[in-house]
Amino acid sequence: MGALQIYEEIKGQILRGVFETAGQLPSSRALAHELGVSRTTVTAAYEQLLAEGFIEVHQGARPRVAHSVVSEARHKSASKRSVRTRLSAYGEHVRTIPPWSDNEPGKLVVDFRHGDLASSDFPIMLWKRLMNRTLEQRPERLSYDDPRGSRRLRMALQGYLWRARTIRCDVDQIIIVNGSQQGLDLCARLLLDATDKFVIENPCYAMARQIFSGTGASPVSVPVDDAGLNTDLLAEVDARLAYVTPSHQFPLGGVMPISRRHQLLQWAKRRNAHVIEDDYDSEYRYDINPVAPLHGLEDSDNVIYLGTISKTLSPTLRIGYLVVPPGLQDVFATAKELADRHSPVAEQEALAALIESGAYESHVRRVRRFNHERRQTLLNALRHRFGDKIEIEGADAGLHMVVWFKNLPLSLEPALLESARRERVGVHSISRLYDPALPGGRPDQVGLVMGYSALDLRWIERGTHLLADAVKRVRIDAAVKTRQPKQR
Image 1 (cartoon, helix red, strand yellow):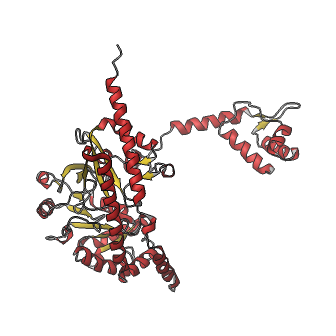
Image 2 (cartoon, rainbow, N blue to C red):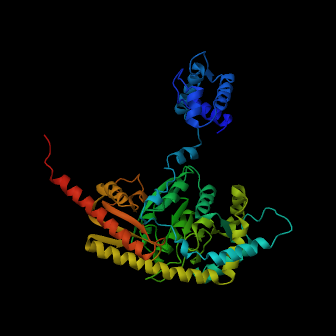
Image 3 (cartoon, rainbow, N blue to C red):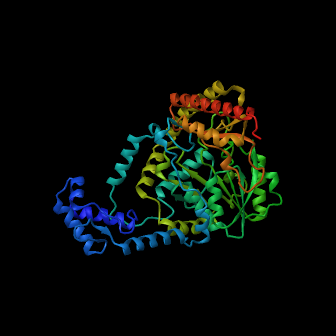
């Protein structure tokens, strides 16, 4: 360690308020011995601190921190704590949202977090070849690209959407975005004002509600049942936008029947509203047949279709796409350009090649088989461990299911989450996905959203065993507290 490093470290400690006013520093001899350096090195550091006024030195005494420096450091620290940074209305809304947390995954044995995928499912060698081939095809010049996205990818998606989802659209109606989150953000910015209302499912994808609320618009939370959004409740609702997940409602898993789909579209037409159709995991259907998307029904001039590869390839690639009505394609392209110019080009070209070759659809079929097996393993393990003490919902499609624990009241949810954490198993409550502003809108029993697409079979069984131990402990603790005599 050199004199400069010693100087910087002591200076930092002084500015952070580590030392009290006139606090003594070690003697040069003692600090040199502690750090294993020469006394000359420490003396040089102290001389620099003295020259800059951070310390005071008196003959025959240890160096002391200068009184003025400590007072100034404390004043700045207090000022930082007391001054609240002024933000925009959007910023104040964002301030209320808890920051992202990874829930310490390294400390968990098993994590049933939904939305994650198994890295072993990713076609890494094929993707590497496609990316290398893309990078080898060097253009004449490096320049900004079309904000709507790679034309090659949009053409590939145009064909794929017709084959997979019977969606007919022009290439220029497709806007490539950085995952579904950016797609929702563009919709919110372009379609909502602060005085507007928007329809959203209850429970729902919480980040969608937060994005739309960030504009200042007010949510109209409409309950869902086993057939998705209850469209009978829309008749008197005056809103500019409705966000729905009709193919596999998130998180409860209901599939909206054709009658409700027509009812929703008719409502939107009467109100001159737009419908955002989030088809986030439509590729995963096990025991049910697909239903035609809203975009392909009636007149789709007010339907915006949102898709992503986050559930088929990887959420780390950040590639999604919007299919917008013809009248909106230019304004969405401009908004995308203002946001970030365009999405990364190399990944778009690689994905286009993957779709063109047929390998993407082969990959989807392969991972669908894997996830069907994971799903069945989780269902069997849950039924084996809990029997009739649980109710399972939304397992016919997608990459997660909702597990309701009978006779486990919602008041015990914090205890269950903590008990599961002690067992080193990650579980995630459904209650946070309900609208907190609606009194009585949440269920009165504990429900968990359990994802399985990132886990192998043995860990699914192991995690279910650990969860059963956690639930058992919570039930025992609750029973003991109930029997304890009340103190006078």
